Image (tube, rainbow, N blue to C red; front, side, top):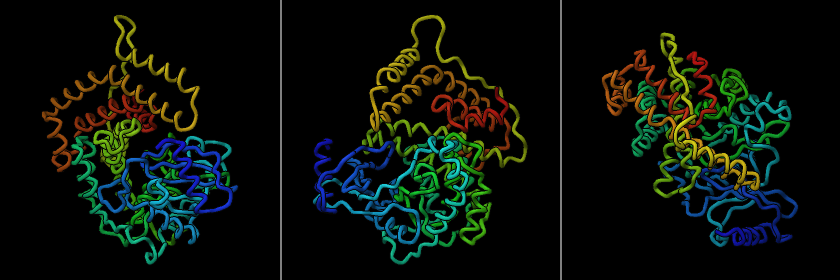
Length: 469
Protein backbone atom coordinates (compact mmCIF):
# COMPACT_ATOMS: atom_id res chain seq x y z
CA UNK A 1 0.00 0.00 0.00
CA UNK A 2 1.35 3.43 -0.96
CA UNK A 3 2.11 5.79 1.94
CA UNK A 4 -0.38 8.41 0.74
CA UNK A 5 -3.18 5.84 0.51
CA UNK A 6 -2.23 4.43 3.90
CA UNK A 7 -2.32 7.91 5.48
CA UNK A 8 -5.72 8.69 3.97
CA UNK A 9 -7.24 5.45 5.23
CA UNK A 10 -5.78 5.89 8.72
CA UNK A 11 -7.11 9.46 8.80
CA UNK A 12 -10.62 8.24 7.94
CA UNK A 13 -10.41 5.55 10.63
CA UNK A 14 -9.44 8.13 13.27
CA UNK A 15 -12.20 10.49 12.20
CA UNK A 16 -14.78 7.71 12.48
CA UNK A 17 -13.41 6.23 15.69
CA UNK A 18 -12.48 9.34 17.68
CA UNK A 19 -14.19 12.30 15.98
CA UNK A 20 -12.79 15.78 16.42
CA UNK A 21 -10.05 17.04 14.15
CA UNK A 22 -9.78 14.66 11.20
CA UNK A 23 -6.08 15.12 10.49
CA UNK A 24 -3.30 12.92 11.81
CA UNK A 25 0.26 14.17 12.29
CA UNK A 26 3.81 12.89 12.77
CA UNK A 27 3.11 9.52 11.17
CA UNK A 28 6.20 7.31 11.17
CA UNK A 29 6.92 3.63 11.13
CA UNK A 30 8.74 2.44 14.22
CA UNK A 31 11.97 0.47 13.80
CA UNK A 32 12.05 -3.31 13.97
CA UNK A 33 9.04 -5.58 13.93
CA UNK A 34 9.76 -8.87 12.18
CA UNK A 35 6.16 -10.09 12.44
CA UNK A 36 4.11 -6.90 12.85
CA UNK A 37 4.16 -3.28 11.77
CA UNK A 38 3.94 -0.50 14.34
CA UNK A 39 3.13 3.07 13.30
CA UNK A 40 3.34 6.07 15.63
CA UNK A 41 1.17 9.13 15.01
CA UNK A 42 -0.72 11.95 16.73
CA UNK A 43 -4.43 12.61 16.56
CA UNK A 44 -6.53 15.06 18.53
CA UNK A 45 -3.62 15.97 20.78
CA UNK A 46 -2.95 12.34 21.77
CA UNK A 47 -0.07 10.10 20.83
CA UNK A 48 -1.18 6.77 19.31
CA UNK A 49 0.34 3.60 17.89
CA UNK A 50 -1.21 1.43 15.18
CA UNK A 51 -0.28 -2.25 15.45
CA UNK A 52 -1.07 -4.13 12.23
CA UNK A 53 -0.04 -7.11 10.14
CA UNK A 54 2.16 -6.21 7.16
CA UNK A 55 0.44 -6.18 3.78
CA UNK A 56 0.18 -9.67 2.32
CA UNK A 57 0.44 -11.49 5.67
CA UNK A 58 -2.55 -13.40 6.98
CA UNK A 59 -3.63 -13.23 10.61
CA UNK A 60 -2.75 -16.76 11.65
CA UNK A 61 -4.07 -16.65 15.19
CA UNK A 62 -5.09 -20.09 16.39
CA UNK A 63 -2.73 -21.90 14.02
CA UNK A 64 -0.48 -23.97 16.27
CA UNK A 65 2.35 -23.90 13.75
CA UNK A 66 2.20 -20.12 13.28
CA UNK A 67 4.58 -17.69 14.94
CA UNK A 68 1.61 -15.57 16.08
CA UNK A 69 -0.35 -17.61 18.61
CA UNK A 70 -3.47 -15.44 18.89
CA UNK A 71 -5.29 -13.09 16.56
CA UNK A 72 -4.87 -9.35 16.69
CA UNK A 73 -8.49 -8.99 17.83
CA UNK A 74 -7.74 -11.33 20.74
CA UNK A 75 -4.58 -9.38 21.51
CA UNK A 76 -6.53 -6.15 21.71
CA UNK A 77 -9.08 -7.67 24.09
CA UNK A 78 -6.39 -9.29 26.25
CA UNK A 79 -4.37 -6.08 26.53
CA UNK A 80 -7.50 -4.17 27.60
CA UNK A 81 -8.30 -6.77 30.29
CA UNK A 82 -4.71 -6.81 31.55
CA UNK A 83 -4.61 -3.01 31.73
CA UNK A 84 -7.82 -2.94 33.76
CA UNK A 85 -6.32 -5.52 36.16
CA UNK A 86 -3.32 -3.31 36.92
CA UNK A 87 -0.78 -4.59 34.41
CA UNK A 88 1.19 -1.71 32.91
CA UNK A 89 -0.22 -2.32 29.45
CA UNK A 90 -1.08 0.35 26.84
CA UNK A 91 -4.71 1.44 26.62
CA UNK A 92 -6.49 0.03 23.54
CA UNK A 93 -8.36 2.83 21.74
CA UNK A 94 -9.85 1.11 18.70
CA UNK A 95 -9.79 -2.00 16.50
CA UNK A 96 -9.58 -1.91 12.69
CA UNK A 97 -12.62 -3.17 10.80
CA UNK A 98 -13.09 -4.43 7.25
CA UNK A 99 -14.50 -1.06 6.26
CA UNK A 100 -11.19 0.62 7.15
CA UNK A 101 -9.28 -1.33 4.44
CA UNK A 102 -6.12 -1.21 6.53
CA UNK A 103 -5.89 -4.92 7.19
CA UNK A 104 -5.95 -6.44 10.65
CA UNK A 105 -4.84 -4.43 13.67
CA UNK A 106 -5.68 -2.06 16.49
CA UNK A 107 -4.74 1.37 17.83
CA UNK A 108 -3.29 1.95 21.30
CA UNK A 109 -2.39 4.97 23.34
CA UNK A 110 1.31 5.66 22.87
CA UNK A 111 3.34 5.04 26.01
CA UNK A 112 6.32 7.28 26.56
CA UNK A 113 9.77 5.84 26.99
CA UNK A 114 12.33 3.71 25.19
CA UNK A 115 12.19 0.10 23.98
CA UNK A 116 15.60 -0.34 22.37
CA UNK A 117 17.73 -2.29 24.87
CA UNK A 118 21.02 -0.82 23.70
CA UNK A 119 19.68 2.64 24.57
CA UNK A 120 18.54 1.52 28.03
CA UNK A 121 21.03 -0.97 29.45
CA UNK A 122 24.04 0.78 30.94
CA UNK A 123 22.67 4.24 30.10
CA UNK A 124 22.98 6.65 33.08
CA UNK A 125 19.65 8.24 32.10
CA UNK A 126 17.95 4.89 32.87
CA UNK A 127 20.16 3.85 35.80
CA UNK A 128 17.42 4.19 38.42
CA UNK A 129 14.89 2.34 36.26
CA UNK A 130 17.40 -0.42 35.47
CA UNK A 131 18.22 -0.92 39.14
CA UNK A 132 14.55 -1.66 39.83
CA UNK A 133 13.77 -3.77 36.77
CA UNK A 134 13.85 -7.14 38.54
CA UNK A 135 11.22 -5.93 40.99
CA UNK A 136 9.19 -4.24 38.24
CA UNK A 137 9.29 -7.28 35.91
CA UNK A 138 8.38 -9.60 38.78
CA UNK A 139 5.36 -7.42 39.59
CA UNK A 140 4.12 -7.39 35.99
CA UNK A 141 4.58 -11.12 35.55
CA UNK A 142 2.86 -11.93 38.84
CA UNK A 143 -0.16 -9.83 37.77
CA UNK A 144 -0.28 -11.43 34.33
CA UNK A 145 -0.06 -14.94 35.75
CA UNK A 146 -2.85 -14.16 38.23
CA UNK A 147 -5.39 -13.03 35.59
CA UNK A 148 -8.49 -15.23 35.91
CA UNK A 149 -9.26 -17.35 32.88
CA UNK A 150 -12.93 -16.39 32.82
CA UNK A 151 -13.45 -13.45 30.50
CA UNK A 152 -10.19 -13.82 28.57
CA UNK A 153 -10.35 -14.30 24.77
CA UNK A 154 -11.48 -17.78 23.83
CA UNK A 155 -8.77 -18.40 21.24
CA UNK A 156 -5.97 -18.31 23.81
CA UNK A 157 -4.69 -21.87 23.79
CA UNK A 158 -3.62 -24.09 26.67
CA UNK A 159 -0.33 -25.71 25.77
CA UNK A 160 1.54 -28.26 27.88
CA UNK A 161 5.30 -28.64 28.07
CA UNK A 162 5.05 -31.81 25.99
CA UNK A 163 3.00 -30.09 23.29
CA UNK A 164 5.37 -27.14 23.11
CA UNK A 165 8.37 -29.40 22.77
CA UNK A 166 6.67 -31.51 20.10
CA UNK A 167 5.61 -28.38 18.20
CA UNK A 168 9.15 -27.04 18.15
CA UNK A 169 10.68 -30.30 17.01
CA UNK A 170 8.05 -30.63 14.28
CA UNK A 171 8.91 -27.10 13.09
CA UNK A 172 12.62 -27.94 13.23
CA UNK A 173 12.13 -31.09 11.14
CA UNK A 174 9.84 -29.27 8.71
CA UNK A 175 12.66 -26.95 7.63
CA UNK A 176 15.18 -29.82 7.63
CA UNK A 177 17.13 -28.46 10.57
CA UNK A 178 20.45 -30.25 11.11
CA UNK A 179 22.32 -28.42 13.87
CA UNK A 180 23.95 -30.96 16.20
CA UNK A 181 23.55 -29.06 19.47
CA UNK A 182 19.88 -28.41 18.62
CA UNK A 183 19.35 -32.16 18.23
CA UNK A 184 21.08 -32.79 21.54
CA UNK A 185 18.85 -30.16 23.19
CA UNK A 186 15.69 -31.81 21.89
CA UNK A 187 16.82 -35.14 23.33
CA UNK A 188 17.81 -33.59 26.67
CA UNK A 189 14.52 -31.74 27.00
CA UNK A 190 12.57 -34.90 26.29
CA UNK A 191 14.55 -36.94 28.81
CA UNK A 192 14.13 -34.25 31.50
CA UNK A 193 10.51 -33.29 30.71
CA UNK A 194 8.85 -31.98 33.91
CA UNK A 195 5.28 -32.91 34.86
CA UNK A 196 2.62 -30.47 33.56
CA UNK A 197 2.14 -27.30 35.60
CA UNK A 198 -1.19 -25.77 36.58
CA UNK A 199 -2.01 -23.58 33.56
CA UNK A 200 -1.79 -19.82 34.07
CA UNK A 201 -1.85 -17.02 31.54
CA UNK A 202 1.64 -16.68 30.07
CA UNK A 203 2.67 -13.55 28.15
CA UNK A 204 4.98 -15.61 25.95
CA UNK A 205 7.32 -12.81 24.81
CA UNK A 206 8.15 -10.92 28.01
CA UNK A 207 11.65 -9.50 27.45
CA UNK A 208 13.67 -6.36 26.93
CA UNK A 209 12.63 -4.91 23.59
CA UNK A 210 8.99 -5.63 24.38
CA UNK A 211 9.04 -3.48 27.52
CA UNK A 212 8.70 0.28 27.26
CA UNK A 213 11.04 1.84 29.83
CA UNK A 214 11.07 5.41 31.12
CA UNK A 215 13.17 6.99 33.85
CA UNK A 216 10.97 5.45 36.55
CA UNK A 217 10.75 1.88 35.21
CA UNK A 218 8.28 0.00 33.00
CA UNK A 219 5.78 2.29 31.26
CA UNK A 220 4.19 -0.43 29.07
CA UNK A 221 4.27 -4.19 28.50
CA UNK A 222 4.02 -4.70 24.73
CA UNK A 223 3.66 -7.47 22.11
CA UNK A 224 1.13 -9.97 23.46
CA UNK A 225 0.81 -12.07 20.30
CA UNK A 226 2.33 -15.23 21.86
CA UNK A 227 0.08 -15.30 24.93
CA UNK A 228 -1.17 -18.72 26.02
CA UNK A 229 -2.04 -20.74 29.10
CA UNK A 230 0.86 -22.70 30.51
CA UNK A 231 3.63 -22.78 33.09
CA UNK A 232 4.43 -19.31 34.55
CA UNK A 233 8.12 -20.29 34.76
CA UNK A 234 8.18 -20.19 30.96
CA UNK A 235 7.89 -16.39 31.16
CA UNK A 236 10.43 -16.09 33.96
CA UNK A 237 13.05 -18.19 32.17
CA UNK A 238 12.27 -16.51 28.84
CA UNK A 239 13.39 -13.17 30.27
CA UNK A 240 16.73 -14.88 31.04
CA UNK A 241 17.21 -16.32 27.55
CA UNK A 242 20.75 -15.42 26.37
CA UNK A 243 19.53 -13.80 23.14
CA UNK A 244 17.60 -11.24 25.20
CA UNK A 245 20.61 -9.93 27.15
CA UNK A 246 21.61 -7.49 24.39
CA UNK A 247 25.34 -7.30 24.89
CA UNK A 248 25.27 -7.76 28.69
CA UNK A 249 25.65 -11.51 28.53
CA UNK A 250 26.78 -12.09 32.11
CA UNK A 251 23.60 -10.47 33.47
CA UNK A 252 21.24 -13.38 32.94
CA UNK A 253 17.98 -11.55 33.59
CA UNK A 254 17.45 -9.43 30.50
CA UNK A 255 20.94 -7.96 30.62
CA UNK A 256 20.12 -6.01 33.79
CA UNK A 257 20.42 -8.42 36.75
CA UNK A 258 21.14 -11.97 37.85
CA UNK A 259 18.64 -14.78 37.43
CA UNK A 260 18.77 -15.33 41.18
CA UNK A 261 17.66 -11.78 41.96
CA UNK A 262 14.83 -11.96 39.42
CA UNK A 263 13.62 -15.28 40.82
CA UNK A 264 13.67 -13.92 44.38
CA UNK A 265 11.69 -10.85 43.28
CA UNK A 266 9.14 -13.04 41.50
CA UNK A 267 8.72 -15.29 44.52
CA UNK A 268 8.02 -12.22 46.66
CA UNK A 269 5.57 -10.71 44.15
CA UNK A 270 3.68 -13.93 43.37
CA UNK A 271 3.81 -15.65 46.76
CA UNK A 272 5.13 -18.82 45.09
CA UNK A 273 8.36 -20.82 45.25
CA UNK A 274 10.30 -21.32 42.04
CA UNK A 275 11.55 -24.84 41.30
CA UNK A 276 15.07 -24.17 39.98
CA UNK A 277 15.29 -27.47 38.07
CA UNK A 278 12.05 -26.61 36.30
CA UNK A 279 13.33 -23.07 35.65
CA UNK A 280 16.51 -24.53 34.11
CA UNK A 281 14.42 -26.79 31.84
CA UNK A 282 12.54 -23.76 30.60
CA UNK A 283 15.79 -21.84 30.08
CA UNK A 284 17.08 -24.55 27.73
CA UNK A 285 13.67 -24.80 26.05
CA UNK A 286 13.38 -21.03 25.49
CA UNK A 287 16.92 -20.84 24.16
CA UNK A 288 16.14 -23.63 21.68
CA UNK A 289 12.72 -22.08 20.90
CA UNK A 290 14.41 -18.92 19.67
CA UNK A 291 16.77 -20.96 17.52
CA UNK A 292 13.85 -22.74 15.86
CA UNK A 293 12.03 -19.42 15.47
CA UNK A 294 15.08 -18.06 13.64
CA UNK A 295 15.05 -21.08 11.33
CA UNK A 296 11.35 -20.60 10.64
CA UNK A 297 11.72 -16.87 9.96
CA UNK A 298 14.58 -17.57 7.58
CA UNK A 299 12.38 -20.13 5.84
CA UNK A 300 9.60 -17.55 5.49
CA UNK A 301 11.85 -15.67 3.07
CA UNK A 302 12.17 -18.81 0.94
CA UNK A 303 8.48 -19.61 0.82
CA UNK A 304 7.55 -15.98 0.14
CA UNK A 305 5.36 -15.50 3.21
CA UNK A 306 7.69 -12.73 4.46
CA UNK A 307 10.09 -12.03 1.62
CA UNK A 308 12.28 -9.44 3.35
CA UNK A 309 16.00 -8.97 3.87
CA UNK A 310 15.49 -8.88 7.63
CA UNK A 311 14.14 -12.43 7.64
CA UNK A 312 17.30 -13.78 5.98
CA UNK A 313 19.46 -12.15 8.66
CA UNK A 314 17.29 -13.48 11.47
CA UNK A 315 17.65 -16.89 9.86
CA UNK A 316 21.41 -16.71 10.41
CA UNK A 317 20.98 -16.00 14.14
CA UNK A 318 20.77 -19.73 14.75
CA UNK A 319 24.52 -19.67 15.36
CA UNK A 320 23.97 -17.38 18.34
CA UNK A 321 21.67 -20.00 19.83
CA UNK A 322 24.18 -22.68 18.94
CA UNK A 323 26.85 -21.16 21.19
CA UNK A 324 24.26 -20.36 23.89
CA UNK A 325 23.27 -24.02 24.08
CA UNK A 326 26.88 -25.21 24.06
CA UNK A 327 27.59 -22.92 27.03
CA UNK A 328 24.46 -24.09 28.86
CA UNK A 329 25.25 -27.77 28.41
CA UNK A 330 28.88 -27.18 29.25
CA UNK A 331 27.75 -26.02 32.70
CA UNK A 332 26.04 -29.41 33.14
CA UNK A 333 29.15 -31.49 32.34
CA UNK A 334 30.75 -33.38 35.20
CA UNK A 335 34.28 -32.44 34.14
CA UNK A 336 35.85 -29.11 33.22
CA UNK A 337 36.26 -28.56 29.50
CA UNK A 338 39.84 -28.51 28.25
CA UNK A 339 41.30 -25.46 26.48
CA UNK A 340 40.96 -25.50 22.71
CA UNK A 341 43.16 -23.96 20.03
CA UNK A 342 41.39 -21.57 17.72
CA UNK A 343 42.30 -18.31 16.04
CA UNK A 344 40.29 -16.06 13.75
CA UNK A 345 41.85 -16.11 10.25
CA UNK A 346 42.67 -12.91 8.33
CA UNK A 347 39.62 -11.42 6.64
CA UNK A 348 41.25 -9.65 3.68
CA UNK A 349 44.33 -10.70 1.66
CA UNK A 350 47.39 -8.50 1.50
CA UNK A 351 48.58 -9.62 -1.95
CA UNK A 352 47.26 -11.21 -5.11
CA UNK A 353 44.11 -10.46 -7.10
CA UNK A 354 41.06 -8.78 -5.59
CA UNK A 355 39.17 -11.21 -3.38
CA UNK A 356 35.39 -11.49 -3.18
CA UNK A 357 35.61 -10.48 0.47
CA UNK A 358 37.27 -7.21 -0.62
CA UNK A 359 34.45 -6.40 -3.04
CA UNK A 360 31.96 -6.97 -0.25
CA UNK A 361 34.10 -4.81 2.04
CA UNK A 362 33.85 -1.98 -0.50
CA UNK A 363 30.07 -2.35 -0.55
CA UNK A 364 29.97 -2.24 3.26
CA UNK A 365 31.97 1.00 3.28
CA UNK A 366 29.81 2.52 0.51
CA UNK A 367 26.58 1.70 2.36
CA UNK A 368 27.92 3.09 5.63
CA UNK A 369 29.48 6.25 4.18
CA UNK A 370 27.20 7.12 1.24
CA UNK A 371 23.77 5.66 2.00
CA UNK A 372 23.18 5.66 5.77
CA UNK A 373 23.96 9.37 6.43
CA UNK A 374 21.00 10.39 4.23
CA UNK A 375 18.46 8.14 5.92
CA UNK A 376 16.40 8.09 9.09
CA UNK A 377 13.64 6.00 10.66
CA UNK A 378 12.78 2.66 9.10
CA UNK A 379 14.84 3.22 5.90
CA UNK A 380 17.92 3.70 8.12
CA UNK A 381 17.04 0.50 9.99
CA UNK A 382 16.84 -1.35 6.66
CA UNK A 383 20.19 0.07 5.53
CA UNK A 384 21.78 -1.18 8.74
CA UNK A 385 20.27 -4.61 8.15
CA UNK A 386 21.75 -4.54 4.64
CA UNK A 387 25.15 -3.60 6.05
CA UNK A 388 24.94 -6.50 8.47
CA UNK A 389 24.03 -8.84 5.60
CA UNK A 390 27.03 -7.69 3.58
CA UNK A 391 29.28 -8.37 6.58
CA UNK A 392 27.99 -11.92 6.87
CA UNK A 393 28.52 -12.51 3.16
CA UNK A 394 32.03 -11.03 3.38
CA UNK A 395 33.11 -13.31 6.22
CA UNK A 396 31.49 -16.31 4.57
CA UNK A 397 33.40 -15.57 1.36
CA UNK A 398 36.68 -15.36 3.29
CA UNK A 399 36.25 -18.22 5.78
CA UNK A 400 33.24 -20.36 4.86
CA UNK A 401 35.05 -22.94 2.75
CA UNK A 402 37.90 -23.25 5.23
CA UNK A 403 35.60 -23.75 8.22
CA UNK A 404 33.44 -26.30 6.37
CA UNK A 405 36.55 -28.34 5.55
CA UNK A 406 37.68 -28.25 9.18
CA UNK A 407 34.27 -29.38 10.39
CA UNK A 408 34.30 -32.30 7.94
CA UNK A 409 37.79 -33.32 9.11
CA UNK A 410 36.71 -33.34 12.75
CA UNK A 411 33.69 -35.50 11.95
CA UNK A 412 35.94 -37.90 10.05
CA UNK A 413 38.07 -38.19 13.19
CA UNK A 414 34.90 -39.00 15.15
CA UNK A 415 34.08 -41.61 12.47
CA UNK A 416 30.59 -40.25 11.79
CA UNK A 417 28.80 -38.17 9.17
CA UNK A 418 26.95 -34.95 9.95
CA UNK A 419 23.44 -36.37 9.61
CA UNK A 420 24.25 -39.48 11.65
CA UNK A 421 25.91 -37.23 14.26
CA UNK A 422 22.68 -35.22 14.67
CA UNK A 423 20.65 -38.42 14.98
CA UNK A 424 23.05 -39.87 17.57
CA UNK A 425 22.85 -36.72 19.69
CA UNK A 426 19.05 -36.63 19.45
CA UNK A 427 18.78 -40.22 20.58
CA UNK A 428 21.39 -39.89 23.32
CA UNK A 429 23.68 -42.44 21.64
CA UNK A 430 26.63 -40.03 21.61
CA UNK A 431 27.46 -38.22 24.83
CA UNK A 432 28.76 -34.68 25.43
CA UNK A 433 31.07 -36.20 28.06
CA UNK A 434 33.28 -37.26 25.12
CA UNK A 435 35.93 -34.49 25.00
CA UNK A 436 36.64 -34.87 21.28
CA UNK A 437 32.94 -34.69 20.47
CA UNK A 438 32.39 -31.66 22.69
CA UNK A 439 35.44 -29.93 21.22
CA UNK A 440 33.92 -30.36 17.76
CA UNK A 441 30.69 -28.72 18.95
CA UNK A 442 32.59 -25.85 20.53
CA UNK A 443 34.81 -25.25 17.50
CA UNK A 444 31.87 -25.44 15.08
CA UNK A 445 29.95 -22.92 17.19
CA UNK A 446 32.97 -20.57 17.20
CA UNK A 447 33.42 -20.86 13.44
CA UNK A 448 29.78 -20.37 12.50
CA UNK A 449 29.18 -17.48 14.90
CA UNK A 450 32.39 -15.72 13.83
CA UNK A 451 30.86 -15.52 10.37
CA UNK A 452 27.29 -14.69 11.35
CA UNK A 453 27.60 -12.34 14.33
CA UNK A 454 31.13 -11.74 15.66
CA UNK A 455 29.92 -9.08 18.10
CA UNK A 456 27.47 -11.38 19.89
CA UNK A 457 28.12 -11.44 23.64
CA UNK A 458 28.07 -15.24 23.82
CA UNK A 459 31.10 -15.41 21.52
CA UNK A 460 33.11 -13.19 23.86
CA UNK A 461 32.08 -15.24 26.89
CA UNK A 462 32.91 -18.52 25.12
CA UNK A 463 36.39 -17.31 24.15
CA UNK A 464 37.04 -16.29 27.75
CA UNK A 465 35.81 -19.56 29.25
CA UNK A 466 37.67 -21.66 26.70
CA UNK A 467 40.84 -19.60 27.21
CA UNK A 468 41.07 -18.45 23.61
CA UNK A 469 43.13 -15.29 23.16
